[in-house]
View 1: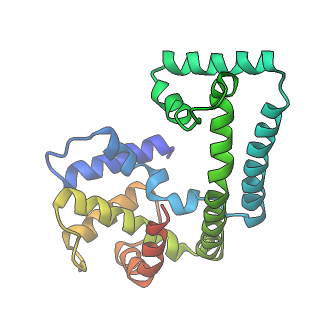
View 2: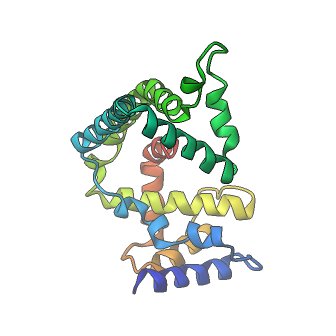
Length: 222
């Protein structure tokens, strides 16, 4: 089946197990196969690529600020005035003003009319710690994801984690440890069938109990 057909099948399961459930856009997203099977859809992280992208981001910001500094007064004023006018037109004037207020009272009018420069300086200055934090997150994600990628147990655990969250929201309480034939196990079994997975419900739920530590760590990062 296509993702659309699988999605419709899972929605039908939800209607059966949650009578009167209003199918909102959020529910469609929560029960979409790409959400429920996100672990399978999630690409293996290549740490080098991620770190290089963050270094590029830092470099581009610094390069943009340097380019702004090289502009002649005439194009510089045109650039900044257009920026301010567009911001005002699109109701972002407070955003521009918040940077303009950082100018000193003694600053010349020529310098005060440079919100683009103020914005770039702000981004460069504040991006340093932000990029460090992002690099630390890349390292954590590397520890979390690639080594588990081939493991079907993780895919099962992730599916159950999503279904437990859905159950908790729409039933008011998380499911207790289910037994064969219990409402939550029946729900899991029907969703697994709708997704055309060759998994039995009991082993799928047991996978979550085996790897719930990993699910908790993953949830903290999203």
